[in-house]
Image 1 (cartoon, rainbow, N blue to C red):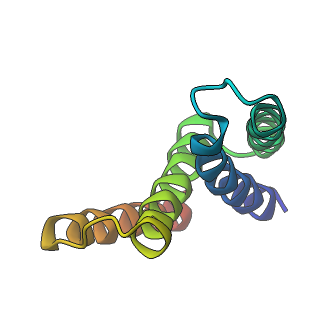
Image 2: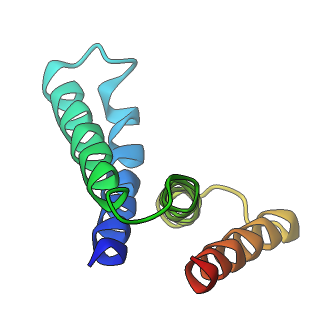
Length: 104
């Protein structure tokens, strides 16, 4: 169950990462509140997962999911560049997440 909560925390972190830009440097109240709410939910879920998972593993997987999601959505939604280096980085992050799960 902790792994499912951790994956959910990572997915919420992806949503949070995408909610930051619309705040326009936290000058727009409604987008800012949405961003802060998503951040709070992501960290709360992470803390729940850490009740039974090792802190280092949980945090690494959480940030890995967030990084992969943020980069992927940046490519799909914002026309961020697709380069061999970025794709290699994504592959390494995913491999790290899988390895962390297999060895935890």
